[in-house]
Image (cartoon, rainbow, N blue to C red; front, side, top):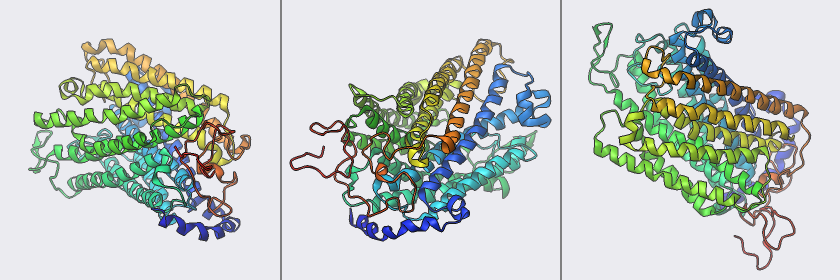
Length: 598
C-alpha cells in the first residue's frame, strides 16, 4: 500500500521555490495549489449560500403574511416578479426550486466536499499536492461556471426553473406548462451538467490521492476519520452522479427533440400531446438513485470533520476508531439501496416498498454507531469549548433530532400520510441541511488558521453558534406540526383552505426565527472576512492537534513541507496518552520501546 507513497517524497523538495515567481493569475485565479483551490470553493459557496438565504427569507415572508407587500421582496425581485412588493406565485415556485438546488448542490456538496477535500487530503495524508493539480483546477472552474449559469437563470424572461429542486417531469419536461419550464429550466439542466463534471473530476482526484500518495507509514488504519469520510464521499459521488447526468440528459431530449422518455398521455389546455410510452416514474428512479447517496455525500464529510474536532477538543482518543470506519463503509453501501423510500406513493408494489422500508431502517444502525461513539468520546473528556467544538456538538443534536423523524418517513405505512408535507421538509432540513451546515461551520472555525494563517474571533463565534442553533430548531421544529396538520409543501398560500387556519401562526413563528437566523450569518460573514485580513496571527498548532497538517509551516508554500515529507509512526488520536508529558502526541512522533500503538 505504501509503494506509491514513497515516490513523491523526494521530488517534492524542489517545489518550494516556485511560489516566488507566480503571477497574480497563476496564484489566485488559475491556481493548481490544493490550498488555494479549497479556499476558492469556500468563498464561492459562501456567496451562493447568501443567495439561497435571501431567497428563503423572501418566500418565508410570503408564507407568514400571504399577499402582503414587502419593500425587501420588491428590492430583490423588482416590479416584474413582485409588483408592489407582493411575491408573484410563479416566482414563489422558482425561489423554492433554486433555493433547494443551491443549498443541496452548490453549498453542501460543492462547498463542503470541495473546500475540505482539497484543503485536507494532501495535508493529512502527507502529500505535496493532489494527484493532478490541473484536473483539480478544472474541477473548481467547472463548479464556478455551473454556479454562474444557475445564477444567470434567475434573469431569463420566463423566470428560473420552477419544478422544485427535484425537477419532476412532466412539469419540467414541457416548456409550455408553466413560465419556469422555459429557458430557465434548460439553464438549470446545463448548470447541473457542468456541476456533475466538476464533481466527477474532483472525486476521482480525491480517491487517487488518498490511495496512492500517502506518506511513508501512513497506513489506511492511520488515516484521520476526516479522510475516510471524504474518501467514501468521493466514491459515492463517482458512482451516483453519472445516473443524475443520464436523467438530466433524457429530460433535455424530451424538452428539445420531442422524445418521450418521461411523457405519455398528456393534455395541456384541452389539447392532447403526441407523446406516448414514457413514464415520469422512470425519472424519479434515476433522480433518487443519485438523490439518496447525495444525502450522504452531504453528510459524511460533516461527520468526518466532527470526529476530528471532537477528539481534538475532548482531549481523548476517538472512541471505536475501527467501528467508525465500519459505519462509514456501511452507510456508503446502504445508501445505494434505499432510494425507493422517496417513492412510496408512486404506486410501487407493496412488497418492494417493504424491502425499501427494511434497508432504510437498517441504515439507522451505522448512523447510531456514529452518534454513540461521539457521545462516548465526549464522556468525561477534558472538553475545550471552541466555536468549532460547539458546532460539532450541535451537529450531534441535529443528527439525532432529524434521525428520529427519519424513522417515521422510512416506514411506508406512516410515510404515506405525511409524504410531500412540511413534515418531510422539516426532517431533511434538520438531518441533512443543519447537520451538514454545522459540520461546515465547525470545519471553517477549526481549520481557518491553516487556511489563512489567522485566528477567527472566538466571542463572535459563540454569538454565531448560539443564535444559529436556537433559530435552526425554531425554524424547523414547528414545521413538523405544520406537516402533521396536513399542509402540503410548495404551496404559495394556505389562506384558501379553512382547515389550515391553525398553521398560520406557526408560519409567522417560523419566519421570525428564519430572519433572526439569517442575521446571525451576517456575524459569521463579518468574522470570516475581517479575520482573513485583520485577525491575530496564528501559531503553527493552535489546537494542539496530532494530525499532519499542523506540522506544516503557517506560511503557505508549494509542496506543503519545506524539507522531506515527515514519516508517520502512529494513529492520529493519541490524546491524553498515559505516561506522556503532554496530552497530545503528533503522528510523526516515533513509538517508544514497548509502547503500544492503540
